[in-house]
Image (cartoon, rainbow, N blue to C red; front, side, top):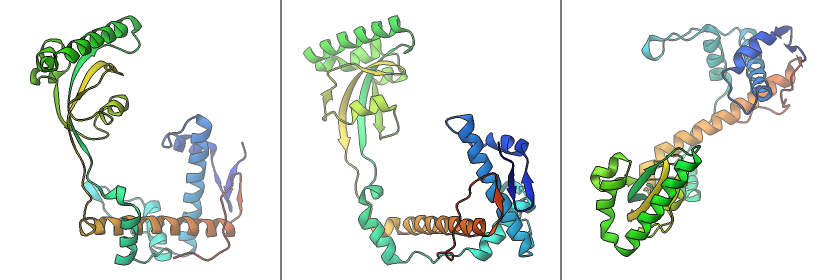
Length: 264
């Protein structure tokens, strides 16, 4: 591996490997690459802060934690060199109108289930659970009113005491394989097939669907402004780093350089 140098400073391989622990990735190579880039960018910013004679002035943050001098240097460097305009109401409104799905309250589902618990890696037990679920579905197709009783008698979930009722859930509250079936049922519909998840096999019924509603612009305007401001600042920081990389003598790693002025 090539030695990473930023101007006259070498970044030790040991530091890269230690930093890699903080960069989850698909494999060790990808983690190392992310760590190397993070350390190279950090060194680039620190060198520029010192070149500009910036006083770090560390501040005390939440729970009494004091900012390190290096972190303070980088923060003050970016504060001094990266500024972006506030998002105006018209820009916020355009974003709201272009992304209506982002500003809806979630759909809610009132569901009930009967769980036949089994570990997915125990094939024999899992298939027994699937057979029990199929039998319960057959019973319920003939006698839908038996759901409450069967849930209390058969379900391995704590909801058994409530007749299998789960209350109101939304997307993300349950495991994906359960959610896929739940969100495609009609109100009062019993799922015609057993639902297999990592917890076992479920008999599932959707009792009620409550559609989400569009949130008014006024309720989310500040949130949109914060989001657009943050996104704009992140783009400007990335551009600033590219400009610094273009001026520096960098070896052992590729940092994208830019010759254009900082975009505000």
